[in-house]
Amino acid sequence: MFQQSIKLTSSTHSICQLEEFIQCVAAKHNINKEKFPDILISLTEAVNNAIVHGNKEDAQKVVHVISQRTNGGLSFIVEDEGSGFNPHIIPDPTSPDRLDCCGGRGVFLMKQLADEVHYLNNGNKVRIHFKV
Image (cartoon, rainbow, N blue to C red; front, side, top):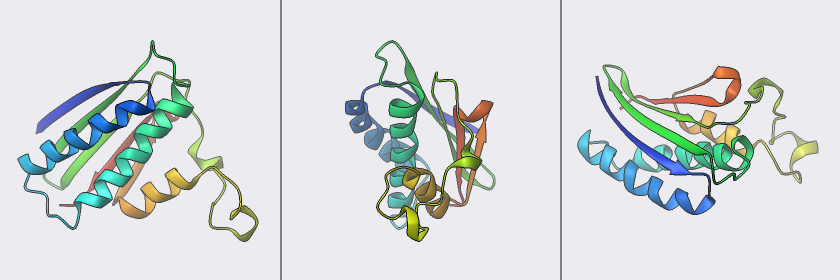
């Protein structure tokens, strides 16, 4: 199994570094151009959630992103230093009574764009898998 990683500070400005990391991973594993946007959007949402909700933008905390090539595709692990959350209680942002509300869209997008999304460690770690 081949893996690459990056450590990001808990600032939304760090998300700029994420795209370069994903481009390097995609080039290394010959990811097709159609799958790249799904990976980029999913990871951007996961990292943004980790920075804002997990680490509360605390400059003393970091977000770890690890890519792992497996026989079944490519997985990314995003882990923050927060206390976690319960992903099962996030309301559906597509329900009519939630369309004007904020929150839950990132988790929803990740589930729609990735082939698998699994939360671990009380929700402060997410594994996002893409079949490539």
